[in-house]
Amino acid sequence: MSARSQPATVTDHESDEIRRGSVPTIPDLSGAIPTSSEARSKRRIASLEGELEMFRQEKGTKQRKTTFYVAQGRAVRRLTVLYTCLDDLITENDRRYEEGQLDDFEENNTPEQDRLQRGYIALVRALPWLHEKLTELDIDETKDMLKKLKKGADAARGDDTSTLKDLVASWVNQDFCPSRPLKSDNKQSRGFAHNVCGKLLCPAEWDFSNDRVKAGIRDRTSDYIVSENSWPLFLYEDYTTNPNNLEEGLFKSKILVQAFKATFTSPSSSREADGDGEGADILENNRRARRQLNQVKVKTCVASIISMKKVTPRSIAYIVCQVRFALSSVSSWRTVDGDFDYEAFWNNTVDFFEMSPGPVADRRVTTLLEWWTRKIFGSNHRQDLTPEVVSKMSVTALADQRKALEDAALDSD
Image (cartoon, rainbow, N blue to C red; front, top):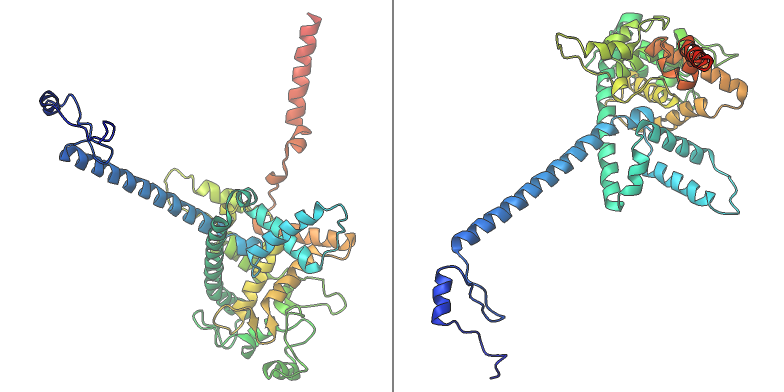
């Protein structure tokens, strides 16, 4: 055996030094330096504690992310899309960007693709952090995030459905005093079987008080098909229509305003639906109430949570579908109710606002949205006080003048 391959030996002197702890034993390549069992135990414990702490941190981070995504997702259905998958919005935006990089790109999008893209823009406005986050996460992380956003979105939709189920019944009973009052906990007596609900759900082109129309709708005859291709009466101001101008009063009904207020501001604010919109600022009142010195707990309204200051077309479409469902006899949320397709109905409502035929119609839509914002949030316009606007006001102008006088005085000296 060569000197290089012989195992290391320990002399008597070295053994004494080892016992005194000054020189470690140097074994061969297959051995190990002897250590104290107590020290090894302490190191194992420290290592396990480190792994446990890391696990707790990772779990805490994951839980915080889950809570954040689910909470943020509650704005999705209310402000962006009621049925469309978020993946479809992202895919459409990616497609447009990729095709836009091509030299021979020609924009030739379908109405459905345009609706998807506007949905993506609405999504990014509702969740400003999302677009950048999509570039940072890998595929699995993105899927997990979108899954949590959907969970929050569906939960919020379910909560609103449950709330409006009760409130719509009370509003109908109060405003119409039906001979057969609606029960808040029972939807089976609603829909076209109920005279008031049937009237409100009836397409604008028919008169539900006509016995032939009423019987045709209830019997679901081919002459009276109730579908998403008709505007229901509950959408109209005073629940009446002008056959020669079907846009007159559309989306200005009291029950829509009540439902919007109940969802986005507070159920109690829905009692003020008859006002002219000149009342106090809902959001400011909510903010101040939460800062009262008596520390009384005040629930933050949905509009404040999602930083909503103006009514948008898609938020109106959301409420339109929710009210339609609350008036119906269907007990569980679904996309199709008989011949009525809720997803197509939502699309029709969004398209009314977002796909107007020209500038004249655009101005009418703008006026309608301003009416809605005034109705829901009052006549406060602080969100319109941009730096450019403020720069032209007297406080800024006076400050500039005083500075100019000071500069002139210094120059003269």
